Image (cartoon, rainbow, N blue to C red; front, side):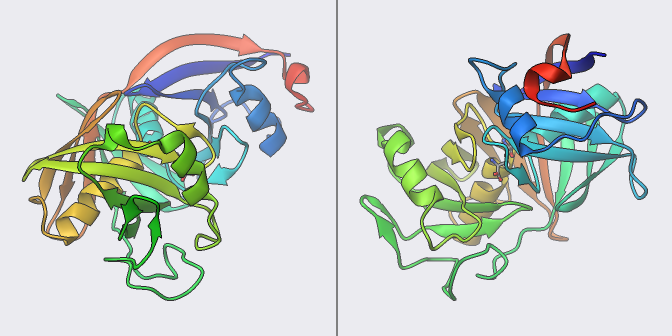
Length: 272
Ligand SMILES: N[C@@H](CCC[C@H](N)C(=O)O)C(=O)O
């Protein structure tokens, strides 16, 4: 038996997508996810995405980071799955039901509402998440936002001047963040434009992070730095993020199918 996969990406943030909506997949654990995601010995991706039937939505989407950790949300993967589905879809995730809809500019996703309470991020102890009195070297006074998954955002003059390969993992694994954290460094360039780089929890530096773009835009809006509709430029391309008056976040941008293939589950320790 072989398992089919589709390799997809959203602005260079890449995924191996396994579609178990109609054909039952064998059980997948963290070890199998990490093995498949490995760029040297596996297929290679930032996140493994597994689609399953859902009782409450059109499908259930499970998301595993490259290190094998299963997570609640992935903005770019949601657009990719929206493209794969080909029409409007309600998608169940660990963070709740989100919806993806094809539009002229790609796929538009209703991401739900942001949370700001310290224990919803979560942090290890109470703190004002709007202006956190903490610092890691030159990265100071961040905002924390949960958009389904946890993010901390630092506003800096030049995101490209920050040594993210060193500071990213240091902050990701700081005991302040009991579930680790996605680390965003952003520059405000206009009332409607942000430049962003993201060190992703469990995946490292990626070309783009959809939830990072949402969390950064919301953090900047909360601080009054930008308007409620903003373009976020990441190394892999741009996303438009809107924070509607009803509290919902809408993310719009492209998604791409790269290629299709299949693998032998035994090669990755998957028991059929
Ligand atoms: N690339 C994603 C985020 C994937 C999950 C994240 N690394 C986490 O651990 O929360 C996106 O586009 O949002």
